[in-house]
Length: 84
Ligand SMILES: [Zn+2]
Image (cartoon, rainbow, N blue to C red; front, side, top):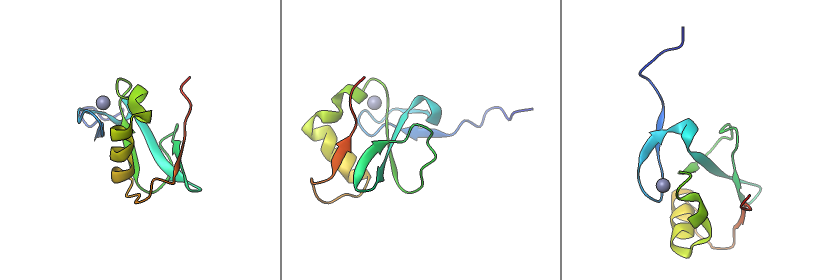
């Protein structure tokens, strides 16, 4: 039987809402790019976005937050993400 009442939660870095991990989109760094971690399986630091905030990813302020939560210092890292 699957355990109930123990859903891993993460916080959206933009709106700070807490949500079950599976309802959020995880971004991580891979080969010097910020990529969407679709399976949430990549190691290292991740940054979570909710679906509402995802369209704001190209917004400069949001980008900064993303860099901050991934501990990236330079703005030279590309975000390898295209809106679908
Ligand atoms: Zn959000």
